[in-house]
Length: 259
Image (cartoon, rainbow, N blue to C red; front, side, top):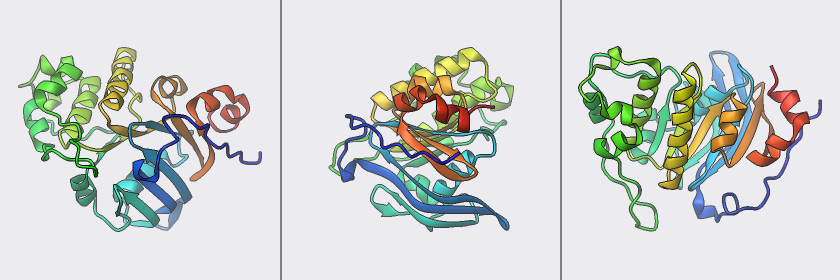
């Protein structure tokens, strides 16, 4: 099937000035060893929007997030974050600028308590380029967002359920007061009630001004939270549109998202 590229409809979420582009990749290529996984990926994330990166298993979604974060030994292309070139940056340098990564495999510190895990992620408050304050996250504020965590502040990470660990990973990332969160498969392998809570959390984060680029296979979940979508197949962007346009396009969904 010939790849279809749809231009996103003009809306408040997507019709933004260049200054509102927080994260942008152009011609992003990435390899694992000698195997090339990404091929000239172009994408943007604007201030205050949720963008879904969709595709089947092995399409390159997680690799895209890792390449943006600087976690791969071999990547090429332009990556710009908050007006800075981070195409050669290490992950800790990207994180220090306000780019957060929430991995699918969680990677919490199992021997540390909830409070200690949160303390590990703490970074100073940030300001937007115009000087206004960016969202500031504290444990108390995060416990309102994740009531389950608020009930177990002294529980070691290793004694939490998979869903609770997922929440803790997101909360730890937010302690860095990020401008943009790269969220890898948030609905994968957790109970439906946790999926629902995660969707509510993403909507709340967006309302607080945090932008999110999420890797996702679950169409229903993506529809609940996303403004726009990019569809990947074999490491290439095959389709780009608003989430509503993707939802309405059965041909594209069948070609690139159906199992």
